[in-house]
Length: 317
Ligand code: MEV
Image 1 (tube, rainbow, N blue to C red):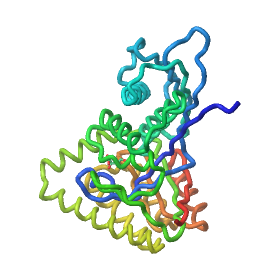
Image 2 (image 1 turned 90 degrees about the vertical axis):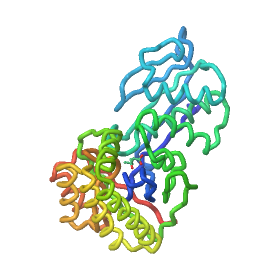
Image 3 (image 1 turned 45 degrees about the vertical axis):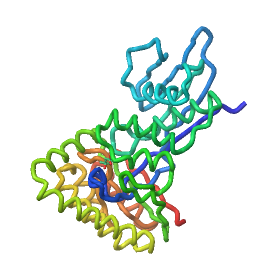
């Protein structure tokens, strides 16, 4: 008998991170090859309640809701608790085992992917379907608890698993992609909390809005141009816009020497463009490449100190 399994992908922000918190547009895409899976199985004999077991890259923990108060703030526990409240039911007797290939705290949305996969698994376990809109709302609630003032872009791209042009509080717009986009993701290997970077940008903004607002506006404008470049398959323009976006993110103080080194290495090795992706201060950068430049750019990223490099392609459509 197959084991009921739910899953959710990682994400990257192609352009517009941070400014999106202030109402500017941003573009994000799912990375379907990096995933969280959540498997439902019966409890071990003698166990009761809902057991959530995290393996691999995450902590090894076991939570029995209502009994185990050691992890009240743990994302797994929160996701399950919010979902049970949504359905207005008590903890069912199941074990959900969560596995992830998404690096944590590195701007790839691992937290939102874990929440999404756990709630989907619970939905399978208790045989109660959950609407995508409701799921997105629940995952956003968890994001708020962990990230302070998230724009909602991470949960949206992960729950819908499609490329999105996103403006906070507006209906999501699907992005049409004219030609495949080949992207390398370079991990600095340094974890960084999005919440901290977002908080620091907020301080910067509050201290000097006259300087920061034009930067946010310029990011918003280049996101709109990026959308056109994606919709017309113009990788040269998209790469140049990604480079501009990285410079603006440097001005917002969310880059790091390691990110700058990887970005420069990718460009020197022939990428159309490169930038940090996500909250910054560590975590990941992305480079726009072609099938021909994938290997040299990947080699350059590893030589420049990337802890690992992932490749992803966004198909036209
Ligand atoms: C994080 O992936 C994107 C940020 O813009 C934060 C947010 O939008 O909530 C940095």
